[in-house]
Amino acid sequence: MRKAPLLLAAATALILSLGFPASAAPSKSEVEAQFRTWLTREIGPEAQKAGVSAATISGALNGIKLYWDLPDLVPPGTTPPKERDQSQAEFSSPGAYFSEQRLQGLAASGRTLAATHAATLRKIEQAYGVPGAIVLAVWGRESGYGRAKLPYPAIDVLATKAFMSTRKEMFRTELIDALRIIQHGDITAGRMMGSWAGALGQPQFMPSSYAKYAVDFDGDGRADIWDSVPDTLASIAHYLALKGWQRGRDWGFEVTIPARLSCAQEGPDLAKPLSAWAATGIERVGGKAFPAHEAKADGMMLVPAGRHGPEFLVTPNFYVLKEYNNSDLYALFIGNLADRIAHGAGSFQGQWGAVGKMLRSDVQSMQKALQAKGYDVGKADGLAGFKTRRSLGDWQAKNGLAATCFPDESLKAKLR
Image (cartoon, rainbow, N blue to C red; front, side, top):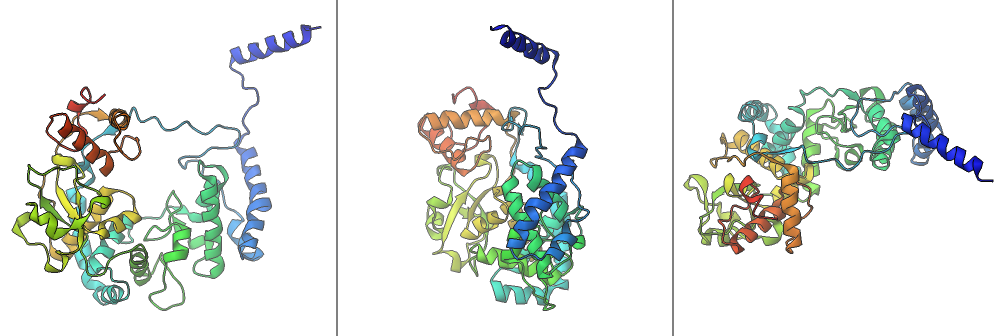
């Protein structure tokens, strides 16, 4: 009575031992057919419910294709990749982010463009409170002042990722928003070019951000972040203003922190007036005083490489810049580039030190060890954010070590 099940089990074991899949994944042509059906049955009706006309949907979706070379795709019939293994990712000095050649080139172009668009930038600052140099710095960093090639049709990219990426729901929402932009008449599908991630135009807005922040500043009735410089610059400023930019304040200042002071005091939750920081002996580099109007306003310590690099007191505007790209180094890049454009500043005076050869898994191990000891490191992801840095500094001080507030190879064996 049990022969059939036994034979079936034996056959299954044989198939698996020979390496044949139980069911083959669909071919590319089959996936393309599924994609077409999905566009018709799911995206079309959803877009119509969002107010997009049948004519707009047909014009935007007819003829689009899947971009198989995009990252993070999970085609039908395949399994999502496991969480990315960080063991082979190198952990290096933050200084690698600041290419002096690139910064000098962007600053030179930025100063020229500041003169060319001076009247527009003055109007933008009056309207939104964001200095022209900051706006130019974001423009330069995101798209090389509009010179960077936007290689992908945005609708194709968004549809590809909405159909078969690791974040399908997010991109599905972005695709519907992109169709609504076309419906509104700001741009045609053929001109809606963007990045491999679906970011649009010169400010690199996702469609949902375009809907919230893009503005028509040149008065032609369209918020054109692809070809209009006034619209591009004003849209960047509008974004930063709505994210909380404080009018009249700087982004931050490079400083020197006395060796006797703990470097484990950084983060927005440990803010205090700049005058209070100055009273501890922290000085602005170059012997400059802090601006008088900043003295009573809150500032935060920032040591992105711990004691191995430049040190800063930053204002809340620094964290607004991080809203554009959630990275300390990105915000520092924007701040430094803006200072070069506005004041002819140079590179940071503090030197970025080497941190030795480590893997991100090494840093992740340190983070997990600190968590086990009760420290709040944020996320144990192999990236040394401010919570990791200050936790490490506190642990070093409590264990009789010189507090560097930054992972380095010498700590791997000590922190387990």
